[in-house]
Image (cartoon, rainbow, N blue to C red; front, side, top):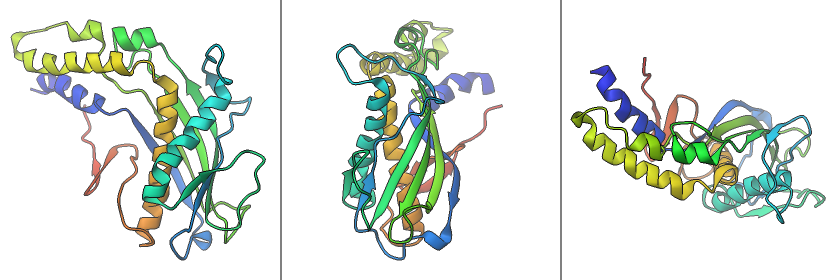
Length: 244
């Protein structure tokens, strides 16, 4: 029975490309006392020590600049809805005197193999993006962060074209239909890669900040961050079952 359920479990778990929040630490003495009036974010940096394997497209910005900027875009897309009016600060722009500020660095960025993602899937050729994050409550301190955490994630486990056409037995035909649909989705999404991961990372960062503010009843709960072994839902965090 367990072996029969495994493909379906893989399908369900693979349906979500995800970014998890890990290693969360809070300096409670620097926490906001009221809802923030604004949220600022700087494009994430990519230090030379980072594990960075992303090619720069011909005629486009340097990949390091692009990835850091996409993370900021992800923050900008969810910040106004979950935290406060949001703006992106350029690297040299002066730090505001109020609100929250998100800064961070990319620790790992790998673009993987688009060909493997399309052809095989299920993690083959998958992308990877890890970051370190600092969140400042500027009214309390612009030097010591209120929150620190890491994010980790990448492209999902969707099936590729090859795996979608392998039928082990008639019993798996319904599952195959879902897998084939996933394969088509893989092809449609294959050009997004690290840029999509970066935007998703930005959204995950906002969710983590929102979670802390909601826990303090400073904003109305609208989202839950994903943590290792759990998934955020509209009704709260649900623990994922372990598959032995």
